[in-house]
Amino acid sequence: MDNTTRITLALFALMIIGAAIPMVAADGNRIQYKHTAGVVTLETDDLSIRITGVGEVPHFHWWDPNATNTDYHVMFVKLFEANDTNGDGAFTKDTDRMIGPPFVLPTADWEFSGFKVDEIDGNATAVHFNFTRTENYIPRPGGAGGAYGSLPHLDPFDVTVQIRVHIDLTKANEMKFDLIISGWDWTYDTSLLVFQFTVTQSDHGQNQGTQKPGGFYQESTKFKFGNGYMEYEPVALAAQNQIEVKASHGEGTGAEAGESVYLAFENFGNETLVYDPTLGIESTGSALPLDANTLMVVGGVAVVIAVIAIVKHRR
Image 1 (cartoon, rainbow, N blue to C red):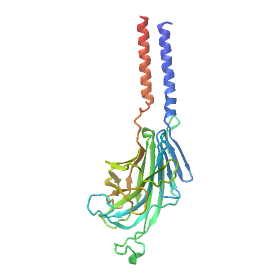
Image 2: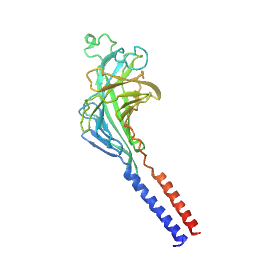
Image 3: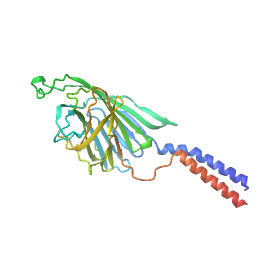
C-alpha cells in the first residue's frame, strides 16, 4: 500500500469520526421532560426531578439517578412580613417578630405555562416552564377587633407568585428556578419579607419527605445535605435595583417537618421581586464527557500524527 492510499484511508477515517461525534454527543446528553396532571418530570444523566403544582404547595422532589437511595424535597411554605430586631438583615426565629398572619402559599392548581425547549439537531438542550398563581391575602383577619387589630390598617390585596423553572445541559446536575413575587403591600417601610420553605428527605420513591435531611449545614451561600444542595444568591432584583438577601435556617415557625430555610428580602416597595436559587446533586467528580468540538480536535490530531508516522516509516 503506497503513501497516497494510506493518507486517503486516514482522512476517510477522520470523516467517519466527524460524522459519528454528533450522534455520540446527542446520545450522552439529553433532557427528558413531560407534564401530566399538574406534575412536571425532568431527567438528565445526572438529575431526576418532579415539580408538583397541584393539590399541594409547590413541591420540588429530586434525586441522583445514579445512586437511588435517598430523595430530597423542598416545599414552599409561606411568605410573611417581619421586623429585624438586631438589624442583621436575616430572619431570626427566636427574636424577630412576624407582622400579621403569614401568606400561606395556595395548594390549588397552579397555572402551567407549557414547555419552551431549546434544541440542537432535534435534541433538547434546555427546558423552561412556569407555574403561576394569584391569591387574595387578608392581612388583618377579624378587622380592628381581631388578633391583629393593633397593627396599622391594611386592606386585602392580591399576591401573584410565579415559579420559572430552567434546566440546561451545560449544568445537567442542577436546576434553577426564578421566584417572582408581585403585589405585596407592606405594613412598615423597615420590614423584611421572609420566604420560608422546608428541606426534607425520604427513601427513594416516596412522594413526601418526612425526615430531616442528613448532614444539613450551610457553607457560604450553599445549603448542603447528603449529596444534594440548595444554593441561593445574595441579591435579588426589583425594577433593576439590587435587593439584599440573607438566609438562615432552623426550626419551622409552625409544625413543619425537616429543616426550615428562611430567605429574608429587604423592603422592595411596590416593585416586583425576581430571585433565582438553585437545586442540585453534587457532582461525583468523575471525568466529564468531552464535547463534540473537543472530540473532533482530538480525533484530527490523532489522524495527523498517524499520517506523519506512516510517511516517516516509508522514508
